[in-house]
Image 1 (cartoon, rainbow, N blue to C red):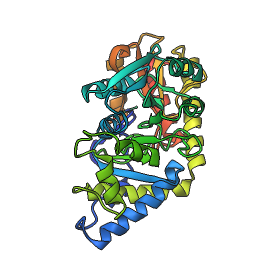
Image 2 (image 1 turned 90 degrees about the vertical axis):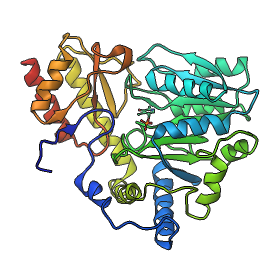
Image 3 (image 1 turned 180 degrees about the vertical axis):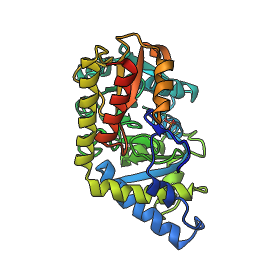
Image 4 (image 1 turned 180 degrees about the horizontal axis):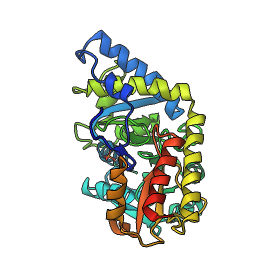
Length: 360
Ligand SMILES: *Cc1c(COP(=O)(O)O)cnc(C)c1O
């Protein structure tokens, strides 16, 4: 990789280490072979550690969006509703996906940049009954991390309500404890803080989710959780999985577990704090609400009114690929991703490159 590769500082896909990329080049194996069963079993064991769960972890050939659709489809019964907590582009899209799958949805919205609180959720749950509460752990468009543990404590008071969490850009960067926090379904994709190439999605799945799926008639096929579970029990998948990506995941999970989950979260928090300090000291500011700022991505307010296209171009010259903001806050903000295997020393290089651009 001596070509003109730019290191990714965008919030997905993120930079993937050479060793992890190389793991994909192992000889192909058939997915109905003993070797595959062993690979799948190894992944299960490591994924359970990474999600802090005793339950199964689905490994799916798709991006995270696929498991969004799967969750909406398998967890919400006909005639019942889901409560979607919406505060950014991704939580908005998940609510839309539930609707497009014919599900009835109530939206509990907060302004972009704000977090959802347990009180808001409690109030909503008192007013109506829901099959599921759907929340995004780390809203990548705004850089907000929601209080998943505290919201879970509220959701648990309602027995029929499943707690579904999108941790696509949180998992392996922001603290997440599936069993302790009573999460029924926690999904992620490979290309964010997991620091793998895109193409795999994962979800920790509780028994309650499977019991619910059994009560839903039209689960579809590709994301039918009962089909996936039946194969998983045999250390397999219903259809052909992206085996090469699974080799990479096997390698990456070893490294993640070696680093230690808590140490990995701490490294991300350190990089968040470095970025916030930088943004504040340069008169830029941070868009997301204080107290809920994401350890994996910081949404910088464009307080100096810089031209984000010029910034990205300048940083491209330094060998970094930068984000220019997302959705309706593009330009008014831009995001600095500090997730995956990025080290604080790399982030320092990024921030000093930005200083050079600002001329400070
Ligand atoms: C990127 C992202 C998604 C979409 O995941 P894909 O893997 O691109 O389908 C969903 N939710 C959040 C919070 C994300 O950051």
